[in-house]
Image (cartoon, rainbow, N blue to C red):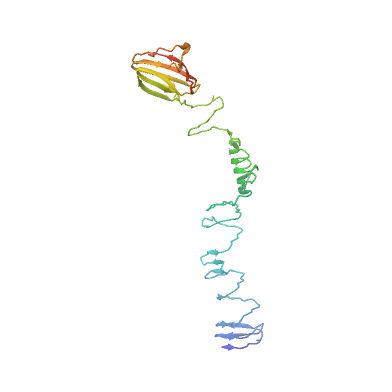
Amino acid sequence: MSLTKIGSIGINTGIAFAGVTTIATLNGSDSVLSVGGTVNFVSDVSIGGTVSIAGTLTYEDVTNVDAVGLITARDGIKVGSGITLSVDGDIFATGVVTATSFVGSGSGLTGVASTDDIRTNTNATFLQNVSLGDVTARQKLHISASDSGAANMVFTNTTTGTAAADGFIVGLTGGEDAQLNMQESANMKFSTADTARATIEPAGNINITKNVKVAGVVTATSFEGSGANLTGIEAGITTEAASISGITTYLNLSKDDHELFVTGNNTISVIGGAQGTSHSLRIQNSGIATVTLDSTYFKFPSSAAPALPTADGSISMISFTVHKAGAVGVNTILLAGASVSFG
């Protein structure tokens, strides 16, 4: 059926079409059009009132959609070439996504990078490296939470290097419940339980308020104090031992204790040594033995050298202190005393 023009119809009247109908012009503001089949519009349709559709509206090539209620799309929604909402719920955006809040753990986020400020009121996990940019001026990274006092992680750099806060701070800036504070112009401080436990002054001095426990070796060039409360200190006495027969033997005075088993005629001399150090020499005869202490080095009271026993099994003890250490053209001088014939 084809109608060229339908004019005004009476009030509360209508036209019913049972088949396919093509309408060129339809006038009548109060007319009612009831279509039982399919209506094809070959030109624009302008409706000034409300369109109510009880079933499903299916249409193609729509430029703009302005809906008050819920829109259901079978194959997803695409906005230009930048945003696509798939039927599975995925959102693909090629541009910038701006959100005022984010809910969820973010464990599935990948490829997250930022060149601007990062601000968060909750935990933040960085899956990639965090760059603070070119540090040509003051740069700061603050991670803080306000409670009874500030809890900060602060990395600060200044171009002048003279600011009090120039350094590295982890922990409370007030209260010092637990703090690691490393600053250029102030003490390096380690604090727990509101108390500074250890500080390193800018000059290098270290102050520790409690015990120091070290599993390895502690090496110091000097020690100050009486040492009255020091315990568990072992003397590092080292012993040089040898068996000799009919030779001149030189004692290495880098050792503290010297043990010799002698046979035949022997002369004892020394090398090295440090002024003020004390040493001991233990001599045991293995058979008949004659031992001479080189008088160039060994000095005894009243210049009387002891007569060491020669019998097999005899034991002698010589104790001496380095009075003067040897040098080029200068002999080592030892102040010695002897105990002989131990039985």
